[in-house]
Length: 128
Figure: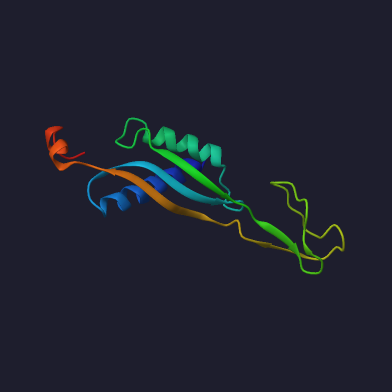
């Protein structure tokens, strides 16, 4: 399950993004995941929840924006009716070569966090 490694890298990026803006706690990370990224969104969310459990990010959500890939025939144009997760080598109408566009996304789109009150943080014992 390589989703655990991806979740760990997303967490590292999100934490760095928050640290660049001052002390704070991550509440949500929004991620673009493409059809061709070889990531199973539900497994990624599961890995995220396991990774942040018992950490300062516990309860932070991971939202996935699914980005589908599109197959297009170079002769006919659009290829209608392709079922999700299925791929064709040739156009079913004219046997033309198909091209694939999009769907290779794996990007952190947004990190939502709560700013920490420095006085409250000091009262709780300082650094986390």
